[in-house]
Image 1 (cartoon, helix red, strand yellow):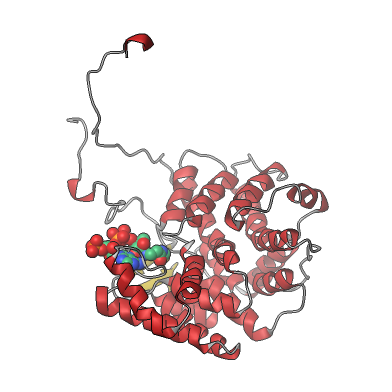
Image 2 (cartoon, protein in one colour):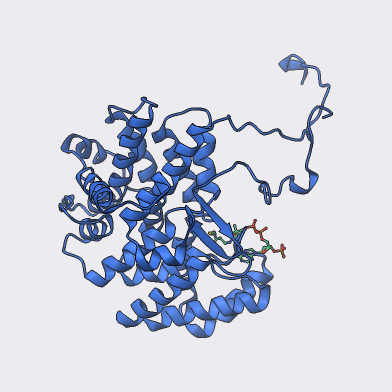
Length: 378
Ligand code: COA
């Protein structure tokens, strides 16, 4: 092993503390997240998802014309064409929606004339198509598995509006659309998280954008990453009542089990996105007459802090927000993907711009000097 330098402190620690690349897409400073220099609070309070998509891809906020243009392009590219839908309908739906989404996005490449064109212009066209279609795919899955007609998006409406519309088939409530739009903003990027890194690793071999996004969806699916929001809802259902919440947390900690939606690799003093989502959770659970879901969440949150000093991440309160919006639990992580695709694309493009293939080394722990023997002699 003399030919490589081993940073022993970082070994088998999930690359904790390792800086893998320079980036100007998003950054965490203390317990603050910013996209391209704007704090997440500022963007969530004032922006729209379409504006944030433009910001992440172009490094600056759009002017009025540019915002109208990107909003229109995203809207126009949302609908899935009839041929593609007929192929989608042949995919079995008895899988997790994230598994289905992974296949569906891969399938999109077969219908994209730019799939293997790596030019900046082609990548920009694919970025719009992929981002526009993500929500349409998720809602198509929900329609197909429920044997309902796929709902086509409406012109002139945002990604958040159309997501709610295509999911339910009826015009969505304005307050819910506004909250969904903010949820999309909050999830749009997060520095070198697991799926963004997966995107960059795949892009670094100069593989195409669809391949990079498929890698990212696979990474996001796991319960230690995006899959946690679904698991939070499963956990709340399992706990059932307020009286059982504290004991559940204490038993989980004693058994060294993870409490979903809690803890973070980078934020040690709280995830700013969770603070915003907590307020939505409080108001929406009250609105649907299930305030106990919020109250139970708060009790779990407080118990985890008291027992372990850990705080909620983005997935903790988003679970009850989506539940209160009437969204099926296994669609929570696909909503994360519907938003995070914006950040994945920004990372893929940044990687393409200043690429060197990711190729770390492993510290050898196996046997050495063995000699092959014929099968009868083993
Ligand atoms: N529940 C219980 N204990 C937790 C925990 C959780 N959610 N998150 C971290 N811990 C504990 C670990 O058991 C470990 O304790 P120990 O030092 O006593 O052994 C310590 O905190 C460090 O945890 P570790 O898993 O090494 O942290 P990490 O930086 O590798 O992982 C997460 C970060 C987010 C993956 C981790 O906190 C987690 O698994 N959370 C639950 C899943 C989740 O919500 N994921 C979404 C992330 S946005």
